[in-house]
Length: 324
Image (tube, rainbow, N blue to C red; front, side, top):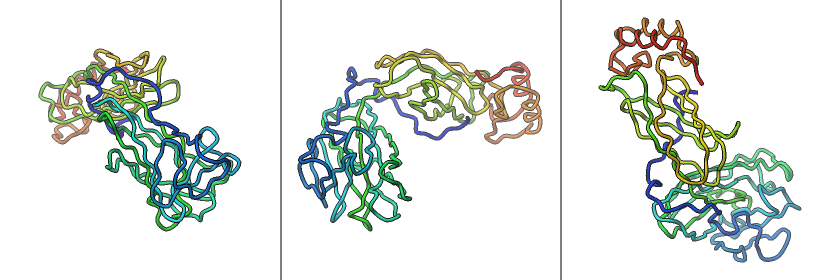
């Protein structure tokens, strides 16, 4: 796949202290609470969390299936609710904030919305469309975002479902885990030192068919520093996949250990103008068809600023190259 659009994380985590691998959110699956079974309109008693607004419902699996464990919550009863917890972090460290969202099943068909706040700032506003999900098929959706620790940070989930305040968003399995950095150098083969335009290279980190991180690297030179963030809780044999623009897919085998990892230089072969996965006659035809073009065009494989004879030469030199 070419030109992915997920965000590319910077190098802030490089200077962070050593990484711990335990979930930093206490009672993130809401298993510890006062009472038992279905607890409605709870304004307190949710261990490690403070509650403001309309109170929350604590719901066990006897009412509907949670995303994890035996309990989940909904944000709001008579009015939208907010839950808050202060977490201890490492200053400058990047963290993966993960949570599952659904909808209280007793409400009508309406969109459930909420805000996620980090130190008082809204960092995400996820939504969940209620379309008749049931107690055993809640349709829990996982959300992930990256936040930066300051040492002591306030995490909040705030319902913004105003029209159905008593039937708000459901929340479960909140986790905050540090991320590690894969560092190295991306080298785009057969490109000009002038580099007239930027090139977008998508990346993904995979374990089998599971993608554990993905994003886009914007390259403005033949060599570009790599800094790719991956949850530190993911360990073992993995693959870093690089793909984009006129470059053939590059696959690098890596072993994730829960610590920052240097992968060295990753060189990508040029010439696949039509993104077919092979440098072939169709790519030569594309360059000839665009000959003389001075716009930001993948046929300008050397990124010199013009589609010219040098681009044809590169495609011919790399003829037969294929994706890994």
